[in-house]
Amino acid sequence: MSNNKLTGEVPSCLFTDCSSLGFLKLSNNNLGGPILGGANNYVFNLEEIYLDSNYFEGELPNNISGFMFIMDFHDNKLSGKLDVSFWNISSLSFLSVASNNLNGQIYPTICNMTDLNYLDISDNGFQGSIPNCISKLPLYFLNMSSNALSGFPGFFLSYSNFVALDLRYNQFKGTLDWIQDLSQIKMPLSGGNRFYGQIPPSVCHLEYLNIVDLSHNKLSGSLPPCIGGISFGYLTNDEFLPLFSDMKLDSDFPQLSYDTNYVLQGFTFSTKGNIYTYSRSFFNLMSGIDLSANMLSGEIPWEIGNLSHVKSLNLSHNFFTGQIPATIANMSAIESLDLSHNELSGPIP
Image (tube, rainbow, N blue to C red; front, side):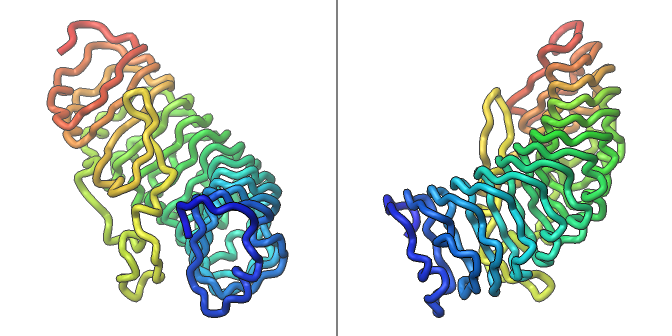
């Protein structure tokens, strides 16, 4: 019943008493009232529930159990804490509570969800550090952007399977040495934090990068020349992504019903002065680098011209010196190039 103009509250019996109902989607309506009818004890028969883009309010239930795969509550008016201490739904693969008014810390009990592949808690008021145990979850997509989270993320990112990781607009700090552990990463988005130090050359060993956003931090030093050897959008690691199939998966992966188009909601990238949200075939359509608003210096390495698949390159608001390398002419896919607010000299190639 999604994408209508339904109003009012949803009878709680719809969630609990319809024993044969396995799928409920009420997305994008004008429904309101307490989330899940306001009850605190639920034994779900539902495997998938979508209540996103409505006006549901109140706190999340304290006690939920059942055999559920997908729970999407994003873009509502939920408040209180994300306390999953008494949730007994270890089968949950997809959880989104993005764009609400939730707050407090992320408790280590979230690591009891041992099948969690996708977690989106972005655009809330969460504070504090991230439990280290998150690195033990089979997460492929993690979006924690636009909160007030802090600490050094390297502790919970080591040995991860992340394909898309969005840490933007928080208060994380430290060096970027942890990036080298993200061997499957396509999108490391860490802009708008307090990271410092140099961009480690180990980033050049990441084979599957498509989008890199390290903007608005305190990074310094030169740009590693080896960055020109990264494939950026040429290689793919789809064989590692169970989320890229619709229920036609081999026995090594969980049986998920959501597809890439749905999973990639909420991941954005800024280019040409605008913020765009990409969904359909995102990883195949876009490739870009944003290192703007840091303290990077030295000459722009000529090797950057080898990035023939990159569509957007933003090195603005840094301290780069010297000439613009003529090899930029080899970036045949470039659509947006921003070198403004540096200390460049010489002719424009």
